[in-house]
Image (cartoon, rainbow, N blue to C red; front, top):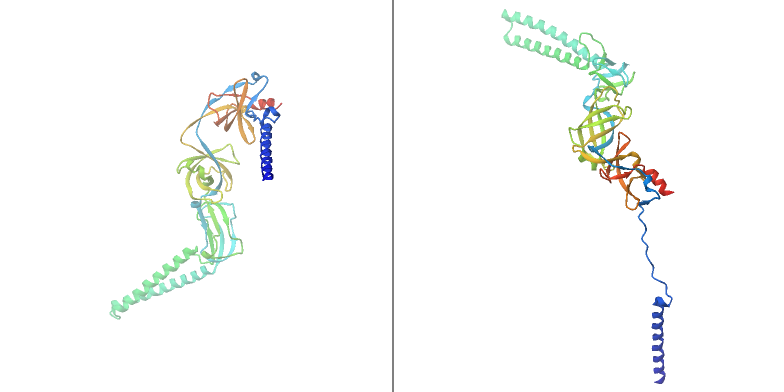
Length: 376
């Protein structure tokens, strides 16, 4: 019993001593470390220099503009002005008088075809003409015999029917020759294929000594009227609200950047590219003569409502880390760096600022010099 009481008293004494040590350790006066002090880092956008008066300050001007959207496009042929050149006659191509890229006029011979179809059509036509001549003679005799009472009226009607059928056969075989491109008055198995319209040959699928199977073969040529062309542009989904059917866009060719043309928006694609998220926008442009198929262009679509932006000297804009910045005066001789969205370059070495500052706000005229001075 005495032994148990002694152990309990020893345990209580140990706990009491441990509590006292803990209080002493937490007491700052007893030599414990002071709690950590958090220091606020300075604002990285604030710049302080020794002589701020040496940096010229300029007020931001006011620039009235119309929002614009710039996209790229490619010149293509107007599909409605493409005319295929076909040969209805099957056979072997003897001569080709035009080549890809040539400018041709309506009625100009393009190729010659030696056709068995045409030869057979001439044979049928000549036979039909001979049959018609014979039936006409028989009809004349039948009329004479009928007038003299030698034959019945039904025999005369049979002769008239045969003559009418012979005439129809002649017309049919004559029309077949015309469709095949042959002249009934000049029998020949050779057929000349001519240009149906004037324009430029933009596709060629035949060569000399090759063959053609009529409508079953690819079109021999494709003639395009390039007086009007299409420009097909890719417009991102987020920018589609910026364009409208029937409006006009400014067209600048990469090959002739100084020439500005106008194109009418004729179609906005009903579907989007699932990967690029763009829609095809078609511009209809009159070709002054120097536009070629496949050229790259830049199209500028202008908005309907004007906007007011600030404009500053071009030297006031600092391009750093893929962003644009300007410096504005702050208190105590400091300058604050402000992120802006740069716009178009303007006459007089000025640049428009879309967002970030307002007209009338003061900026440092040469941001690069201030940046270098602060770095030193």
